[in-house]
Length: 268
Ligand SMILES: Nc1ncnc2c1ncn2[C@@H]1O[C@H](COP(=O)(O)OP(=O)(O)OP(=O)(O)O)[C@@H](O)[C@H]1O
Image (cartoon, rainbow, N blue to C red; front, top):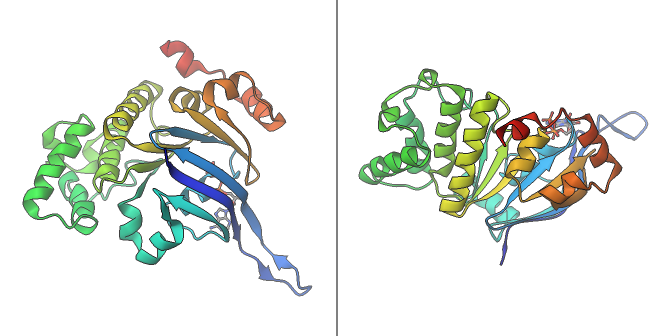
């Protein structure tokens, strides 16, 4: 079985202008030599405190940031080849779902027009095929068909996130990077969203990178978890094992400082 993503020795350094004394000023090492694999069909949770480099890693995976050094294979394609081919190649391979669903949807366009963009620009489908795919996509995220004629402000946060997921699925990329996808939602809506994501992953053979600082959410959806601290991965392991028996001091302190796992406890 090949990996959906293979990351080796990945480094990202921001800034680094020279000061009067020849030392690099304002340099931030956001990611410091990460190696990770995402298996096909797997959900890999990524946890870590604010500033640990989770979003920088995510942004490099989808081509929004250039690595300083290291290699990545995304769906067996070298990252550098995808970057050389441009955003269309990335968009058909790997998609990013943002935390704030309402802000990620253009308020002046109908949902149909929003879904039209990737179908036109990334897939080059004709209008008949686009109309068919839009109905399939909206159905896949369990929204009514009249959603296509409505505008983003007419939807709740949970509904808007379903639409954002439909858009991420439009170009048939098999890998989604979900960056805090349920953090802006009410706890009751979070559970439904996690269920939908699991169904989509299984039905469409997707692989997920799932970033969150909510350990309960990560434990409930992830097969494996990677713990980031100061730009490094300090521990990886199967989700249940890692949370039950953390090996690294930082993982232990992260678990100790997390609020009680109320969402999963009360859903049981
Ligand atoms: N464009 C940038 N320029 C300079 N520094 C940056 C930039 N983007 C991120 N950083 C820095 O890199 C480090 C990692 O940030 P990053 O956003 O990846 O962390 P994070 O774990 O995703 O945090 P959060 O959970 O708050 O989103 C931080 O110190 C941040 O200030």
